[in-house]
Image (cartoon, rainbow, N blue to C red; front, side, top):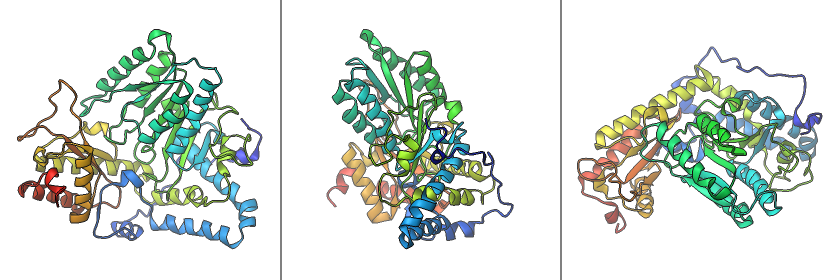
Length: 451
């Protein structure tokens, strides 16, 4: 690591762990104004996919963009590095990292996965790892992470073990049990598990994973490195990287932390960070440490990395700051999920304590949702005909398992609802009524394909 390099942000300055929260809390009217650029007729209950950015932060972003456009040389030499370092220092404090040079800002969690997995792939290619040594991941890992494993690990001779995530899930114990079984499989025939990839919050289906316990088990089982894909974490659950104990931890800042797209932080524990961890886009900062490499990958718009101070100002306008927002969103998404499940006569996909700001709600079996194609068609129908935006998950029944039933049959589809500060009760009532109307009209997913 480059501890003495000022570009890593090392200085005598230490920002407060708990920034001062405003005594003049934001009002509901203020929130509506901050998100007035949203389409007013659309029930946006899909914050989990693309996030959202308030108007005050967009104004700060525009300020940074104009700085560059007015005088790019002065921006590059005088403002860019200091601005990115200021953002990294805020993130360092928010996630309880020890050093600012453990924090890099990258485009998204997909970029971070490529950074970690290309390093693992090189170790296979260079013979540091044995052929058929393995990487362990959840079977519902984000598809881009699976593709990175394919691109960097399996083509270099590594193998993959998938941990089956039970769903619907009833307790953390079920997940822990599946992890232990997969570790035993991964270590069979003398193989070694070189890396475990663990989600903090899975994307689809959405479940909060007992990440600290899973990391502890991985350590006890001798797994060399652990990478936590926490794309949905910061802003929706508490993030303390020292408590989690992983080597690498990534979370998007544009999903639940109000940054404009796209920006994420990648934490690399100082004991595992080394000179062979590199940004996949090689520029003239190559070899100067990942935080510096990531701060300049060529001419591009860096404004999303620079607005973190403005985001902190925004969240501290809420009672309780970011913790208050997290509690508000969790409480409301659970309340809305229960309201939908009761109206539809279905179930939640996980206990409330295993959700954050997203929760899965079963769809009525009478919709006959039998494939991913059905899920996409229903999602498009809700968008086009009812102005409701919500992701839909097709639950593939496992052999020998009957699954969850409602009064008419097996539940094979779930909506993933999100709650962010701009959402209102009317958004969820709009979804509730749309599904009820389809059921009352006798519409099935197969019929929607004919419309």
